[in-house]
Each structure stands twice: as C-alpha cells, then as structure tokens.
Length: 296
Picture 1 (tube, rainbow, N blue to C red):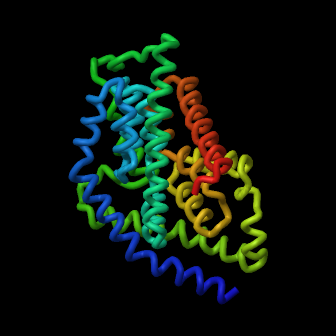
Picture 2: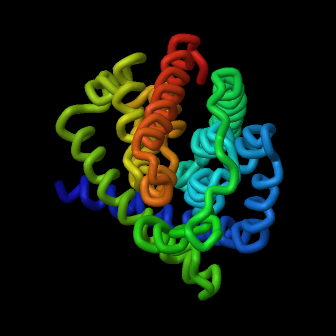
Picture 3: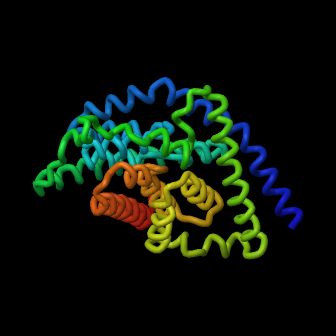
C-alpha cells in the first residue's frame, strides 16, 4: 500500500509543471482571442457548425458556456451549439499533454472531434430546416435585452474555472492546475489500487473496453457537467482500461459546463433534454463506429 501511495504521489507530482504551463498558455489564448472567437461564431449564420467545430477544439475557458447562452438567445443555431459541444476538449488536452501522450494521438483525437462536430452540426441544422423547425431569432426579456450573455461568469465561477476574473492569467492557471491535479491524484490512486489488487490484464478486460457497452457507459460519464468527467475518461484510456472508441464517446458527449449553463439560461426543458439526448446519441454512435472500424 505504501508503494501504491508513493507511486500515485510521484506520478501526479511530476505532471504539475506541465499542467501549469499548458493552462498558462490556454489562459493567455482565452484573454487574447476569447471575445473575437465568440463574435466570429455569432456572425456565421447557417454555416456556424463549420467555425463552431474548428474553434470549439481550441481550449478556451467557458466557450461551451458562452455557446449555451448564445443559443438561448437564438444568436446561433442548434447545429452550431452541438458542433461546439462535440469538439470542445475541456480538460482532455492538458491531461494528454502532461502525460506526454503521442502528439499524433492528440492530433487524431482533435481531428475526429472537429470532423464529427462539424458533420453532425450541419446535418442537424439541415434536418431542422427541412422539418420546418426554424429557430426564433433574438429572444428578448421584458426590457428588450437579449439573454445570450447571462450567467456565463456566474456559472464558470461556481462550477468550473473562474473564467470571468480579471486577476491575471497566472492565478487562474494555478487554480486550474491545482484543481485538475487533485482530480488526477484521486483517479490515479484508484487506478493504481485496481492494478495492484486486480491486475492490468483484468483491468483491460473490463466492460469499458468492450465496443458497444463501453461507449454507452462512457457517454453517461461524459454527460456529467464537470471537468472531472473528461479527466476520468482520458486517464482511464491512458491506463488501458477503456477502448479508443469509448474514450471518444465520453469526450464527444462531454461539454464541460455547457449543458449546465443551457439548463440555466434556456427555459424550454423539453428542448434542453432533446439537445442532451442528441449529443449523447451522436457521441455514443460515433464511439461505437470508431471501435467497430478499428480506428485508433
């Protein structure tokens, strides 16, 4: 047990410098390009899923939350919203970089998320148009103001990353690093215990490593509106306890706090559930196809 604890502390401790540098770069990018990215998405119209998927893959704090509010104000289409959700990397990218994952693996994951997000978003918008389910533009409150920017900072501060702060990128990057390091410590300890008592081969044979069942369960984990879900999914894959397709299902469904913000800002609960269902269905189906086709 002492060896398991020491290995866990060592494994996580050596990741902290890489996590901090990654988050520092992400925070700098967010402060430099965050507003420009959002404005570009707003102007994209029916072709929104294309830039939505591309820009969603860029790690930006609170981007999925902003997209949820933009959709609630009917500034973007449902296809654009889904494309951003599907391509959002959340905490996957920092974990992969800190674990020194193969750069080609990282690029492959990002490329798949963008391609699936773009294709699914365009298809959903097309189906909505031919189905006559046009989306009302510019929903306003009683005073004539839009709701598209409501609650973004509040939700981020409470549930995710304090992206609305103006206290500098260093403090925010440090907070991200410590938060994710704590998640990694718990997850790594649990995995090390499992490997110690069960064995690597038995762990690799668990249900998460099976094509259909693994994707279904990973998709459920991805629906949890918290950065811990993407950390768990990525770490399980790196430890060999989850197939590539199952990991993709979880990462595609995982949209950070996006769904949580959508529930807060969009008052149509049936529509919220439908969006979550479509997101889950696309993510799980994509993961199953990836596993069956042997993509890795």
